[in-house]
Amino acid sequence: LSCGDVATQMASCINYLRGAGPLPAACCNGVKNLKNSATTTQDRRTACKCLISASKTISGVNFGLAAGLPAKCGVSIPYKISPSTNCDQVN
Image (cartoon, rainbow, N blue to C red; front, side, top):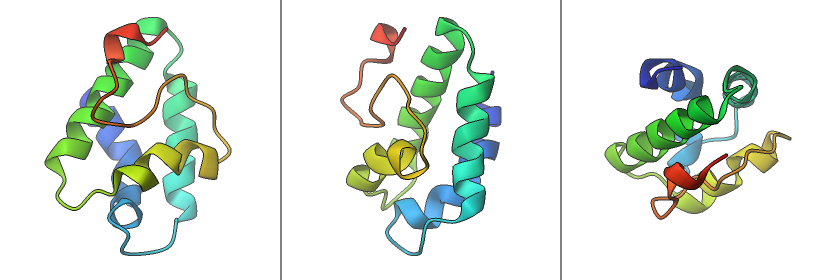
């Protein structure tokens, strides 16, 4: 799993995460695909780090929307998408 993979899966979420549009089905599909492809602890940590890094570099991200995204898509992930998340503690 690479940050490129994460970015590809999450690209359709950007407008939603900026509060600039509805939650597209493609975004939730990306969230689900990302969860399904992160099968090991290392994959989950990588995905976490990539998500946090990307969320800091994309201007205008609403972290409340980001944190709630997995639940809105019906997916449970073992960490919160937040700048304060310590991805090294993800299992």
